[in-house]
Length: 280
Image (cartoon, rainbow, N blue to C red; front, side, top):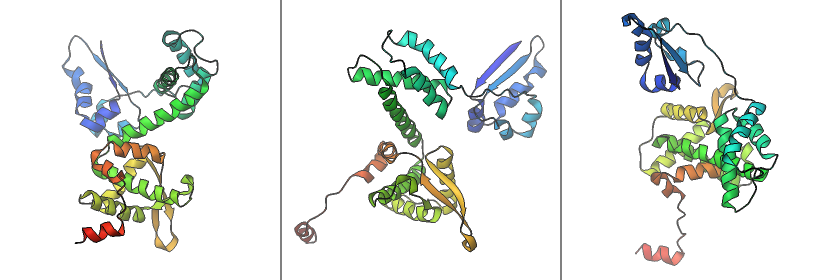
């Protein structure tokens, strides 16, 4: 018996199609002395729906769901790893439970919990402190959130970044007027007009409004913005859009692209005398 395990099989299917899955499900027909069993590990529980009908019929599968780790389970994992990573007495008693609770609440992911504890330790070490405290974990949470947003932005195509910058710009403008971040939102039409301005300044041709809404949907899917459908009565329905990430995180992510970093350069205001001479 040969067992093939494919981790993140859903990403494989989305990126390269299902031909590999089809080949593996049919390979037993040509094997004489052995048999193959396939284990697919996926984050998207509905990825099977993406498969071709022929592949689904060959893939006689049984679905096993693994729920996210709870705080108690994450705490056990962290205590086990902390024995290897930290000297005894370095971690304050509340650090591991706090890391576990924060990770379970947001993700239920052991990798996130371990990253959080590691980052908290690095912050304490960098500050020259002899103990890792709860405050270091809070700083680590902010840093990991920022890193996640920045990495997500780096993967975006140019027009995805242009849509995000347009929303960032509108959000920042409203915040400067004294409006609370949580209350700031815009519509698809308003955001598209701002996006057109961004494309003009970048010197790139804009996409159609239909393609623009695809980018909005994708940014919503990866958590950089929130979009919901709202009824406008006799005017029909529209999407209400708001930034989902801290504006400073979005700014750092966009600045990492040289094409967009120029949009953040503050140009000095010309004096009347400078304007006069520049017009000669």
